[in-house]
Amino acid sequence: MKYTEAKEELIQAWGNLGYSWGLNKTMAQIHALLMIAPKPLSTEEIMTELNISRGNANMNIRALLDWHIVYRVSVAGERKEFFKAEKDVWTLARQVAKERRSRELEPILKVLREVHDVPNDGTEETKEFKKIVKDLKNFGEKSDGMIDTFIKSEESWFWGAVMKLFK
Amino acid sequence: MKYTEAKEELIQAWGNLGYSWGLNKTMAQIHALLMIAPKPLSTEEIMTELNISRGNANMNIRALLDWHIVYRVSVAGERKEFFKAEKDVWTLARQVAKERRSRELEPILKVLREVHDVPNDGTEETKEFKKIVKDLKNFGEKSDGMIDTFIKSEESWFWGAVMKLFK
DNA sequence: TCAAACTTTCAATACTTATTGAAAATTAGC
DNA sequence: GCTAATTTTCAATAAGTATTGAAAGTTTGA
Image (cartoon, rainbow over all chains, first blue to last red; front, side, top):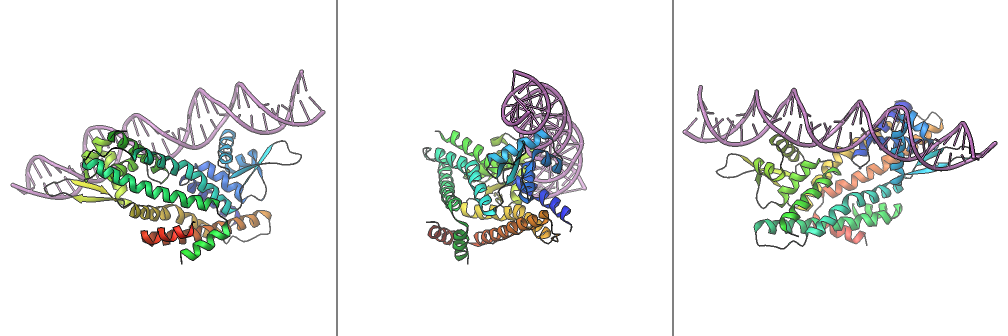
């Protein structure tokens, strides 16, 4: 396989993965492009490489900055902005975990806490409801703690510990 | 908060969460409804509770069966099918992890393995590309192993081990 | 202060995905 | 085999999301 094909394929695949991460396709593709680029790229370059409009490029770059997985870079002698992606996979993973926790896990935990205290009126319905909510809340809170440790951890410590744990 | 409100709110929240899980909103809502129901429900009951059409209900129930997080149940003396959700949160979590691994992680790992061997033609581009792909592949494979252990693990063992590890 | 370079916004539109509902298919009992 | 109950399919359409491109806004340096 040639480099250009491989590059194309990786960008496509990363675009699909984006969906499972709460990014949209273009966002993920820009991220992939920046990740494998040896130098920061300008909006123009991103537009050309991915064949997308200026507005689209701009919006999705903003969203990536908002996720803190793409950074603004200034290049000496150039007036326009350049962008680079976080290249350290570990840092990337922690950042994504952090964002997803606050976008996905926290909202559902908030609801679980709210509905946790509905009075048990003695019916089967509320009994079952309370049981399930309790279990979900418990699970969610344990997961939350685990993710928190992950986010704050050091790569070497983490994999070392996990390796010991998972065999 | 009253039970009916709480129920409504939980179903809505679970519907949103569905998005971050590769389910769609209705699928996740049906799942929530079944999870808190003390008895298996028929398609009719699901249609009424969620105000959705027969076709919609049917399609999304099939999808949930396909994910193996909802089961078919037959009720004595009734001709129609009834459905119940997996109620054990731990089993649910493992099943979701299993499905997501094969729907999200495996495809990207496949691509990473494919593009891993592009020849280094000496340019900056291929050098950087190969480095990033190597890192991503390494990370993905470690994660894959970890998820695998999780899927095969017992709840009590897992949280015990994790608690020791994370704190 | 001006104007060129560059970035942002947003209404219009294209594209994608979800939903409906009625017709077709299947199933079960007589 | 027939019929009524039930499930499945799928074309039509509604709803939701992404994308464009041009106009408006902002920044920079002479």
